Every structure is written in structure tokens, then in C-alpha cells.
Length: 130
Image (cartoon, rainbow, N blue to C red; front, side, top):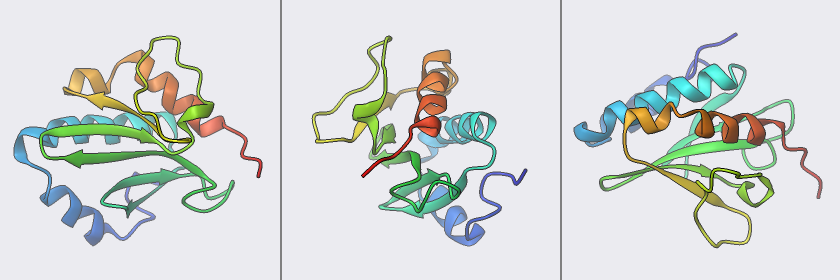
């Protein structure tokens, strides 16, 4: 199993992380740890201004998308490009786009919540059909 970032361009990931506001770095680190724990084979890349995780055995960075960590100002989001397909019994998902949904993550503890882990696990198992 590769560590998160090992299959991506490490310098690109380092540049992204260096640009994260210091007060949000612990949240991003906790999310990265959670994604790596849930989907250890996911590839991590920098895409669309965030850390993107996908399953290469399913497809590319869209078809095989699991989730993305984005930082917009002081807000950290865990985004799911195929979020409309996820079951969300805890009511965490926000957004009204055609398919994309996100969870606002306010703290490292939020990033480690069981409900967040369930969404990541479910997103990694979504079967994509055209």
C-alpha cells in the first residue's frame, strides 16, 4: 500500500499544503489521514485547486473520483463529485449541483467523525455507469 501522496507528484502536493492557511492545516491533515485509512489504494493528486482522491482501477480522476479536499479561505470542504449517489443518514451533505455534494469540515475532530468515514467508504464503492 502506498502512502497518500506517494503516487502523485510530491512537490505538487507539498506546494498545495504550503498554501493552506496555518489555522486549517490540522483539519486538512486529519482529512488526509482519514482518506488514507479508508481508501489506502487511492491516488492523491492536486486537481481543481484541491487534493483529489480517485480509484485508478475504476477510471480516471472523474470516473474514479472518491473525494476532494478543498480549502476556500477559512473553509475546508470534503467534496464528492458523485455525491448525489451517496446515502447520507446523518444529513452532512450540502450543495445543490447536479451531482457534486460536500461536507463542511470545521475541525480535525469533524474530519475523524464516523459519519465522514462512512461517506468516504461509500464514495469509494460507488459503481459508475455512464
